[in-house]
Image 1 (cartoon, helix red, strand yellow):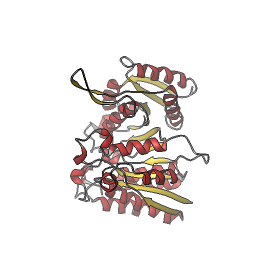
Image 2 (tube, rainbow, N blue to C red):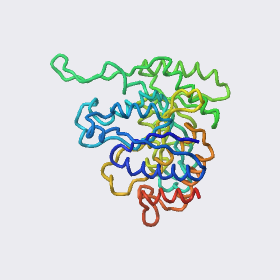
Image 3 (spheres, rainbow, N blue to C red):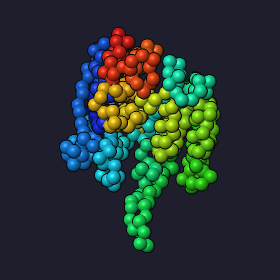
Image 4 (tube, rainbow, N blue to C red):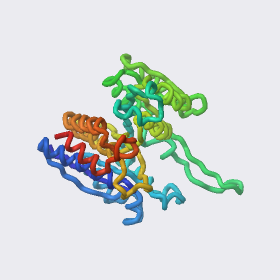
Length: 361
């Protein structure tokens, strides 16, 4: 099979973890006799440095032409004081919108081998296995009007949480379909006691849920959900919510897995005529500039994102399963980076990537 993949290493540790994900993809392609066609583009801070903007037209064209895109990370401290429109993260929002990848899938699994890496008590986190489905192309990150202005002589900032009913319905339907292949429970997260936006979300969730009678639907307020993720994480299966809430909750949920360096993600939209998804695949973690270039970063989230790519965009389920099994073998071996608190000397980014390839065979 021909795998046409755009690679966007990005900023900070992005190039390091992406390099190991590509190493694993190359290994898999050779083992299963696939043709791997890689192109590379600029996104984020490096794109600003080299082109003047965070999402160059060349990158847009390459992303639309590729079957799937693998992203490292975006963001650099030097841009932190600039307006949102001039920051590296604007490129990330731009490519999500250009590809219309409206659902971000973030699996969170508490592996037995990492049970001691979580700050939570073992009996609370053991067995946690949930999937956060985050709406990705609407809400506060894209709503208009937005900006900072002066009103009545005082600086005033405005952001708008805007959703159309169709945007809410499509991400909810994806969550229910995914739950049908898991433990058949959907937790819909909102703030319906305060926000009209959430009141509409809850009404649509209740209506859509009737089309999936085999799936249990639970409504929960976002503040309570944040608490219950820590108190009873094993009670969740598929968690679906809007853009901002999903961004925050998925980072919180990383403590269940022991490190945010363990969380992959897949951003997908409506399927193509072939039945596959043109997706954007990226680790949940940020660019971590404090450890960039030191060969310390955990590449497993990036490698897991590559596995998700094979699964969703190419339908290569056996290859994806082989990567995931190899990751678990590496975790069990203890040959892991410092963030996972190994008992011996921590492995380097490169060593973990090599170990995953070796475990695949």
